[in-house]
Length: 406
Length: 224
Image (cartoon, rainbow over all chains, first blue to last red; front, side, top):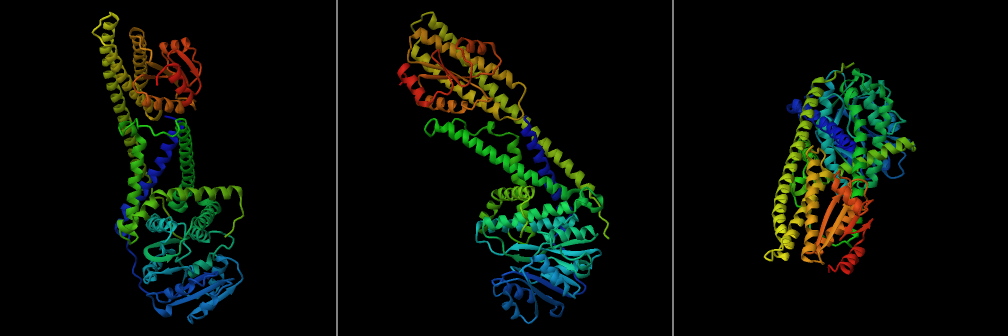
């Protein structure tokens, strides 16, 4: 056994360990997955919607919010026009119930803070202009706010459109995130309150100082800050928000590099949490293991690419020596082609399929092999490569210190 | 302020399961490795049996018995050597890809190499006794370490073997194996690097391309 095999076994061990850990968290809480506490009362809530050139979506977004199943007198909406040069403001003005604030182009976090100044309701919800909450969205979430120490509740985000390959992959990825976010909730280690659809207690959000305006991932930063200040974040697995996903590789690349760089920066910002028992499982396990995962993804990516490239190069070179004549295959399928790597391959395939199945079931979808098979396959076989590329790019950008921008 | 706790029970439980799964994998690997060795062993045994059988025929031949047909013997040899070559492929495959190598493997490989060399001797003797000049033997010295040209060379030889199955006999020998006979062969034919070919007793160092090999086999040794 060579060094590389030992590294592979170590990497596989970590992958298996994480899978088993999350399976066991799931198994322990399997009966509570769909449980949302019933609200005793309906607290007043304001939706904050930062919008920059969103004329295409903002109308639909406002309609979906105004038609939520929630007492109308408890529901307020503020749109913060972040320096749009299109018809965003004009469209918003058509909605009498909606308050419009305008600012120069200053970014999302500034827009949210500007809006927050005008919030007088008990709760505040963040919403992206290209996202649309489900009718029962609030009913599923507000009950958690009656629990002690809870500062925020996160939703279940789904991809709205699945036209392109990238969107199909993300569609499945988001289902997986829905499932995983609930497990993170049970394990008390959520570290993101996603932009579209997270709700907060207004007084707490104001007390901790609102959103960090210098952060490229303000939704990660605020979550970590809330945890740092001793607050809890809950999650509802069926409070659906539908959102637009980047349709092509370039858009997705930009989005993910921003997310992951934001994550890296914020973990450094809150590095005191790492290995600190005060922060429970988040500090003890989740933040450090995510860093390990970053390197695992990078390693797997580069080692696979390298092995593949080197082997193809050698074989093509050898094949070229016989003018690419096709030889009769010498080695048929037999015991000599299986070893313990085969075992790991099937193990991970089984784990992957099982997670996929759980994700589908617990995000309220159905396994649909007729229409969705290509989604699943793309996700299983293309997604790992994509995600590795994004992480590697994020790390490189961070190390090189490229300018952080939106 | 919420009091957070570390869920030790999950971490310990998962560690236990992970270790179990890993050991399952490694145990399966060892089990498979043993199974492969057993298969190689049984193939080698049958190859050696056929060899002994042929030895007696060859002895008869050298006693100048007219009833033993040179042609039949050559055909029989060709078939067995082809089998030996295929076994050699599997031995190589095991050596290069198997992660958990069984200790008995290196003994087996030596045993296999000796069997192969013995076949080579018989072919050489048949060539002498039967006057078969169109029978070409190739000793192919390869290495599993640091030999960039060995894969192309092997591919070229496989191709030629498929093209001329009758009269071309290839014996692939590991340059690095620790056997006296291999050292002697290396010395006799002055083989100093890999890949090297010894075609009917003549040494060619470095990669012999398809064109060169065709030229050697066809013009010089009248194989085609």
